[in-house]
Amino acid sequence: MKKVTFYYVRHGRTEFNRDKVIQGGRVDSPLVPESVPTIERSAEALSQIEFARCYVSPLNRTHQTAEVLLAGRDVETKVNANLREFDFGDIDGKPYKGNRGAFARCFLRQDFSSVGGESGKEVRERVRRAFKKMYKESADGDDVLVVGHGAYLRYVVLEFAKMSGFSRRLVSTTMRVPNAGIATIVAADGEFELVCMPVKAEKFRSIN
Image (cartoon, rainbow, N blue to C red; front, side, top):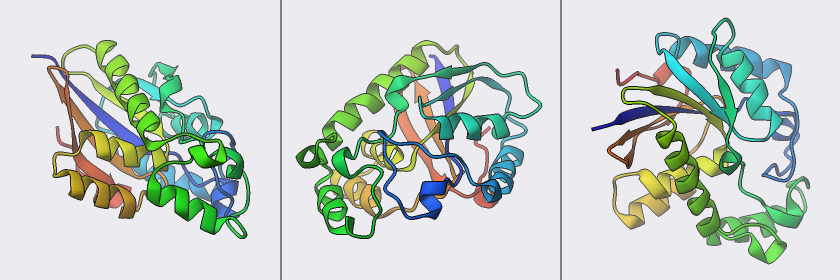
């Protein structure tokens, strides 16, 4: 039975996070310098794990985060297009002020297609494609680093958390995903399970 463990880390805090700008899959902003120590703490929490490779989304904020997480290591980094953040449509890149109501309505429906973005169903399909590809490219026993996004991780919960449908929806909607927070997904024989919800580095415990 082939088993692969994925350590999913959300990117560090960005300028748009700081400035309260809606930041989805259409827009990108660089990390703020003060986010680096937070990422370094996550790097330290993961320091005993020998990663076979790292996957990042196409957005630069994940690339910047991966560079800090893997500083001093020789780990191959690959882009997986299906790790891209949720596309929030026409309100992507706009300030929350003045757009909070529209964002909240779409968020609660888990569907941004009314503003030209993606639906939650489409994101869940991308989650399945992303993890199936990463699993296929991995060997038995591999530990794999995945650097991605906060809203996207909510759909990892919907897809892979082992709880009732109602509980998955509730947790996905209400959970906090800290910048540089770490979650763990285990795949065994092609079946995926989210075994550790996103936590800050100080609370992270390796399953190895």
